[in-house]
Length: 249
Image (cartoon, rainbow, N blue to C red; front, top):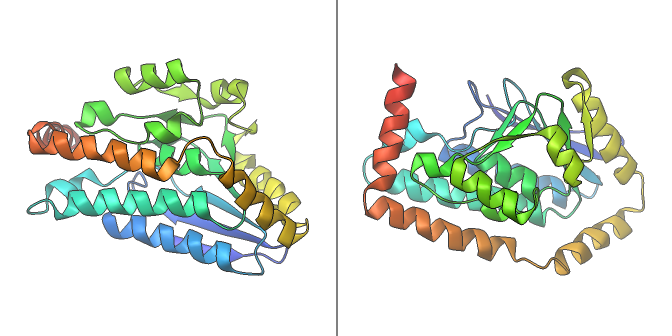
């Protein structure tokens, strides 16, 4: 259980998240993931990173049960800071990050996939932001990197999910493959990148981030401010408690 990294001979670092039952990460888990991605990018042997998960889906966001079982606001602040750190680590990773998405990619999963350089998905993958139904906001910054503006707004307001095929049509998912072939497909893309001149690839990543029209870190931090507002007025706890009660039934 947790986050593991394997560096392969071809220069690909494979980072795997395994946090049953749904890969909803605790505060510590988000920071662990951030550290793993940062360390992989700084490793001179690494030319590309594959980020994937074991289990039923890629990522279901934050561990709401941890948040609701903790006294005070420490877990909420920790989850916000942990998500910020993990999303930023993917974006700032010194080499390209290929996200291999299967099953559900929700909430924090959108932050990871949206900040990745390339997304490869299985044909059972779906993407969504259930934040409004959880009394929170955030990761619309990253969803806007995956879908057009009006669809992004509809997904935020309605909590609608979209499948990998639709994202492939928008060009944000590079390939859609059968679930059993997902790892191989993602590794193939990463190996292609890692085989290139490592200095040039690192400068390519730096240059593409430098011309990005949106400051994803500042934009996401702005969104997080509204999550804190919702918590102050009680909406956050109300919806998170309802989610925990529903899960207990």
